[in-house]
Image (cartoon, rainbow, N blue to C red; front, side, top):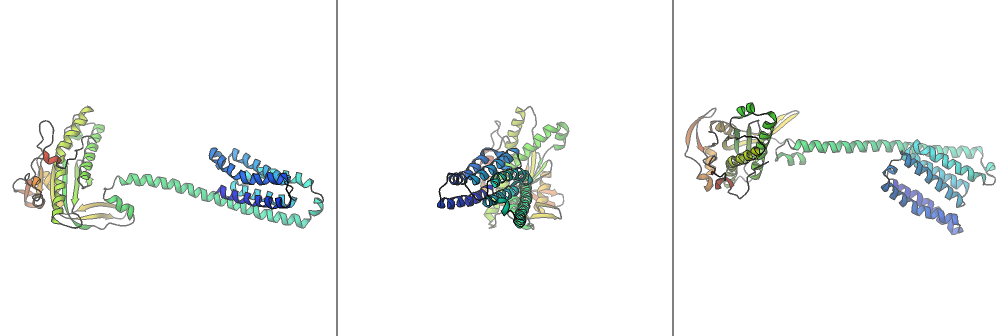
Length: 422
């Protein structure tokens, strides 16, 4: 419950009564009461910040302080010379407030304090026994019972709301951690779509795309020769490097299948031919970056006593793919499906170790980029499973690394560093 505003309201009313009484005649007790109403709410707020136990009404320290507060208020009201019935009204308000705040845990000790002060004050009121008629007692009990009932209802409701609040905070924190974890399973391009429209299904749409399928050569032998812990480090480092290279070039790492990685570069929305060529060029540069990147990883692994030299092969194809959410029911997969994906997979299977095979469509786009056009071999006829005889090109230079390990200029033509340790 918002403790300070209600405390200010209650003490403000009591201070107003004390101020009006001062207009009729100045008494030391009234000045003490007025000073208390002005200082105590802020003193209480400061104490709550200093001692966290006071923020929880059911703690022993909080019960003791509330009982002391009730005693101090009732004594100051009595010393101020207020009539008995006004003191009784103040006592009822105090009891209603502490009950709404802390239930029986606060009500019982504060009630004992209020009753004790009222008894002491009542004995000093002349003719009190005459005024306490049955009707007066009954009406007082009725008002008190009604106030007390409202206070208990308020307390229970506050407890329920506070419980709901804590559960909501806990669930919200859990959901944040779950979302942060789940985001890591999603492609980078999908994360803003899920955040902005979480219930929206991204129906697959056609996009002209350049696709590359990259495979680790000899992965079966690598699995058989390495301890599981070493294998996990090798594969994770390779995938991390692929993600960094692809992201740096503006592409999307769609998925990895143990020893294979699928990346793609969709054309920009304007669909210009020049942009298609640039997307294909960036895809080719990722594949060309692989060999120097793998050399850097090998050096890093060697420093940790792990002798591994990975070799890859890649296939690149361009064409229209349907990109979006595939699946239904409880499971969706944001990916791309189309002939270029299958062709890229077949091309990498046909490539030599360290080689990159490029489809005719992708090669036509790469010819628009002079540094890469010089790296394309002449067209070759290859029988590609599922596609028949196709004209393919080899992207030369994928294994051309200087003896000192420095990459050929084609690998780093944009001046950016290739990841060496991830």
